[in-house]
Amino acid sequence: MNGVIILNKPANITSRDVINQLTKILNTKKIGHTGTLDPIATGVLVICIGKYTKLCEVLTSTYKEYIATIKLGLKTDTLDITGNILNKEEIPNLSEIQIINVLESFLGKSIQTTPIYSAVKINGKKLYEYAREGKEIELPKREIDIQKIELLSYKNNEITFKTTVSKGTYIRALIDDICTKLNVIGTMSSLIRTKQGNFSLENAYTIEEIAKKNYHLLTLEEVLNDYEKINIDDNLFEKVKNGAIITRTFKEEKACLVYKNKIIAIYQVYSKDKKKAKPYKMFIE
Image 1 (cartoon, rainbow, N blue to C red):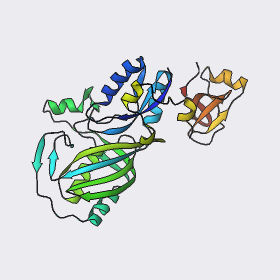
Image 2 (image 1 turned 180 degrees about the vertical axis):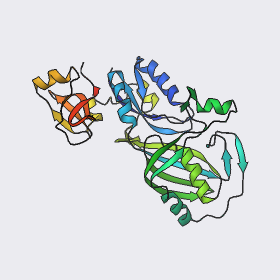
Image 3 (image 1 turned 180 degrees about the horizontal axis):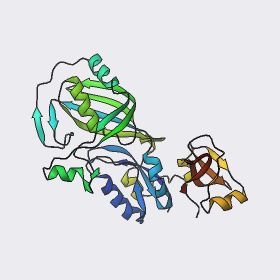
Image 4 (image 1 turned 90 degrees about the vertical axis):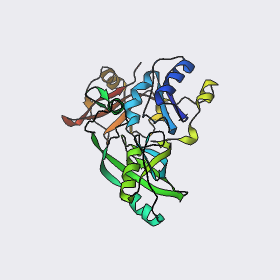
């Protein structure tokens, strides 16, 4: 089986748990996802199967849209509602304008500190393992890009907002930074991934639906429909199937090479010579 399934992840299980279940349901071990969701989170989890697992790196790099809720007056060690409570405080009066201004201050690129409760590895060990052992470690920082952010509601001491963010953005960490700017404490109480690239929650299937074979398996052409397409002839096909560096004929950083109406490879700009292109992902049988 080769293809991509858009899954609606349920709450209270890990992304790895999802893969383990699908391995049994679809009877295949060659399966992966394209962006971990916390156990508390629900929503879009893009599943790659068979030779399409080569797409995991491609699809992980796309922007993602989330709807998140902050519970004010509470701080936990994991930065979400499932963690151990570290502190409770009275909630100061906040106006919607004040919240909107703080949210919008995060638009664009910035540096984010990775949460200690995460699967990022330092010296071969996951950060959450250091946390559980009570060991202190310098947390890595990375550049993130927040494309959109908007307030959806503020009521009952909870802030709900929608945001579109780059790969590697931790919404829990973003919430912690938002609360710091608002001069309050808060923790993430819910998170829904509503979009990843062109894939949306409206087109996602539950694990139960997949088990009943009620799902659509996306083809390579459907998944990569946004990429520039370059049709190649027999002569060029012979070179491409052997992984040759070829003359670049596309405008963007990457493009799909098409032979007899099928995508056979993604090529990217060759760093040593911008007029040439080299293989990025190959899909030739």
